[in-house]
Length: 248
Length: 189
Image (tube, rainbow over the protein chains, first blue to last red):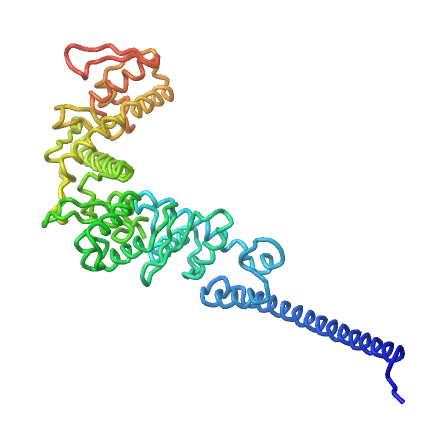
């Protein structure tokens, strides 16, 4: 006699499947609920933490950076928004907004003189001076803060771009596209204290005379470098105000 | 922490500042920075002169293209090239801050342009109700009338230029004198 065949078997199999599915859904629901309570608890803890360490978050760039990373893992961006709970708790919502405005201010104020390219070190130094004047000197700022503020300005269009020049970051505030050749020459300019010439670029980078001249001319057309024609050896020197001068 | 203004940075540290730039946009910035340097320098000179010698000593400020000290920087071993000097002078004239004296060689420099002076003088006249009476240029630059005002010590030639601007605006009548600039008369309306 063969059992488990025919209609009865089919019916039982479906029942089992339904039961499993039901159980599975139940488990899923339980998991989700569990996870949701955990997230809520975590968020609550994060908030408590934020309130407790408000001062340090505002003051200490490294601490702020770690806190920010922790928050972004759970999808909260407390420092970037200036509305809602976080801003009320921390009073820091406008932090990056304010910093962003100050960065734009520095770029505009120095653009005439440096052709729209600025070293991060200088940018930080100018920002600190501005903030000191605004009575914000107790709020230290770091390179990460500046990076984040620049990123938060992105919705306004890509007017500001960071470019890696050798080991250093530079901020470009003009529409010019910097090719790898351009950044290579900018890097060379930094190792030569802001003064280059066509022969120096040829020697340092192993380039042809035409290539060196073309790149230096492009940077000159952009106002990023000026030409000194009074050198002893008669070879024009290309000088970079963004590297040589303190402009703010 | 006070820092030197941009033009002083370029002047003190940047050799290329002494070569007139080929790039047009850069050249415009360069000439503008030079204009500021020149005007600041003359303003300083005038203040010193007035402090040490009194208002009467104020003569016209003359810039010589060959020998203006700021055009040379011994520390950097650079001197503004001839094209640069000419561009700076032309810019001063175009902006109302200069007037050729010996064309191509020397020019008068006005820290304030004649039209800036015109409005300063006219404001002073308005505030003190001096309309309707005739004054001489001497009274304006050295008289009790303008003591402790910025008008005290103004160069006579510059003062007359300012008054002529006011005359064109129907705010004054100027009565030229054959004797001297100082005796030029003016009636404010």
